Amino acid sequence: MTGPVPTITAPTITLAAIGVDAAHEAPTSTPGHAGTGTSGTGTSVTLDSGSIGLPNGPTGRPRTEFATPAPLAKTGPARIVALCNQKGGVGKTTTSINLGAALAEYGRKVLIIDFDPQGALSAGLGVQSHDVVTIYDLLIGTARDPFLAIQPTSIPGLDVIPANIDLSAAEVHLVNEVAREQTLARVLRRVVDSYDVILIDCQPSLGLLTVNALAAAHGVLIPLECEYFALRGVALLVETIDKVRDRLNPAIELDGIVATMYDSRTLHGREVLDRVVEAFEDQVLETVIGRTVKFPDASVAGVPILQFAPDHAAAQAYRQLARELISRGAVD
Image (cartoon, rainbow, N blue to C red):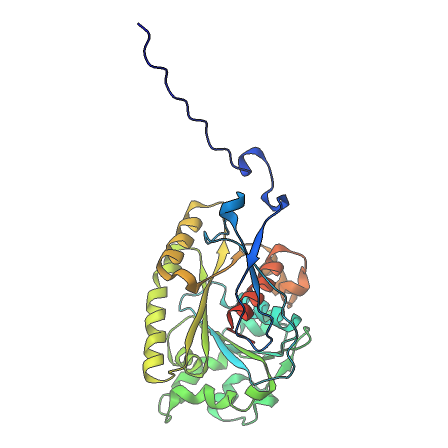
């Protein structure tokens, strides 16, 4: 007796499985949204990956092409963005350096504040941090004019106020000051009209210096390493931002969470990124910064990766990050 003929389901064949590079397919696109920056050109195009068989981006959302922004008609007043995460080694300094360089490439005048006593940002941009006026001098009042501390970098339009180990004593000096949490805000008030963007590279803690940065900032960008221990601290940081908004700075916003040191080859990295997107949804930026040895090489050279290896994928990622933030209205 002959039984029923079994049904055979053909396996799903993906482009990657048969060696086809999805980037060579002809995508269809739909208009994106217009940003709220003053450049007026923060448009983006979302690729409908589901309808054409292309993979989504690392965040699991359709890929978006962010338009190149037009130069601004005038300089200032600056929007102040603090790059903050209480965990060390997550890419805050690397992101500060290269995001600042990318914004400068797009015609923005950028000032970066090295607000970490380790002074890694100053070293990474090749500027002098000893025997010069630093952010510490401005905080404790031994120097009054912030323009005396500003140093140019090798990137046109990108300046920096350096820091060194002296900054570690600032919290002790400030602890008895009136309105001590507003000290940095008072310093930046004098330079805000001379720049389009001011980035603050915070130290890996939630102490008085970081609270000063949050009290002075219009927005917060959280670099997040795609690793479990980095993920654990994000909720505490968001809680701190909420407290600062409630008690010191009602205007502060979370501009986004940018995933750094991402390695798509590891299951752990993919799972951490998936959990971040699940928890914070659209607050997670589409741009993801991959892990590469080019970053430490650029740091040794004392230049941003955009100058050290301008065509490298990591340099392109930071250019996309700048375009995405402009498109979102996080910077002008």
